[in-house]
Image (cartoon, rainbow, N blue to C red; front, side, top):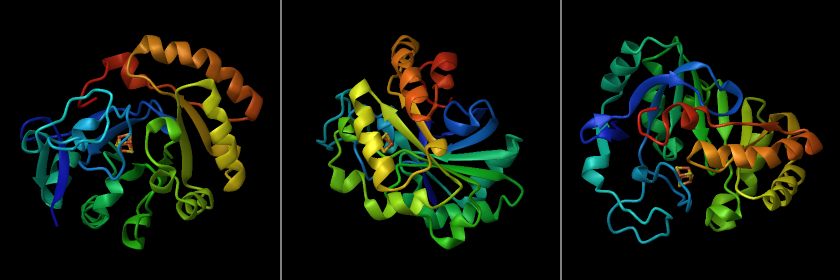
Length: 244
Ligand code: SF4
């Protein structure tokens, strides 16, 4: 079953080595594979080229839509594994888009990469089937709050939030745009008994200045509620660019 990947340029799959920029593994050297397609449509999504294709009229603040042929490429599991192995890292980050939409193909891929530790970045609306789940060392779950523009009935599924809350491998990374967003986070943490030690608050933003400004008021919120703060290292290091 082929994988549908995002591209860094037409025909070039977005598979690259870098340090993880967000969440509990920030700073860790990893290989990244970015899958195309998403089941949500966040207005501030910084990877809209994975889903906001020509003809898609859902709102995105960038207004741009992307040509599907230039922004998607298919690879077999064997081809993707070969490119991942060639980058020589011990840890793989599977990101998107929403990568779990391609769970079957991912399971095939990971069966070819038995020596790698694996983390998956997901919006938390779906769970990995057993064949894939058994290979995952860490889930970075990023439930989307109201400011994402997604209806709660699509983005915040109680059964899925409970599923990840009960899984010690799962960390929750909430994207925060305004101090008032904390109310929604607290309600979700309470409703789904999420361990605060596994909760990260991360500023929304695609430039260093916005991230730094928001971190000023995120730190006191973390202190008050016992949450952790995540920066977005890749933005500071490389800007908002593909393949980083
Ligand atoms: S869930 Fe992630 S990939 Fe999908 S639209 Fe939102 S931010 Fe973008």
